[in-house]
Length: 107
Image (tube, rainbow, N blue to C red; front, side, top):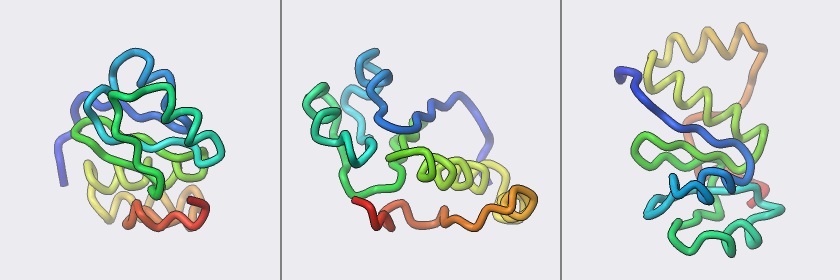
């Protein structure tokens, strides 16, 4: 379990974070359908194509809306522990996967 602090989470293409310079010299991912376009918008970001989400320090980016749910559950697991994450998932009737960010069948 990790203490929560200041974090930035982006869902989808992460373009706003990259345009603001928040993803400069960071690893990030983007929506797969717009990946090449987003990648062309920021040469200072290392874009990871095959990822549901990418964690780089205090920044988490996801490759889309459903991947954003996986990313959020990963974060809950990280800061509050597996028991809490499992309770949240059960309450939300969420049956996603938040343990392997590389398990992205759409990439």
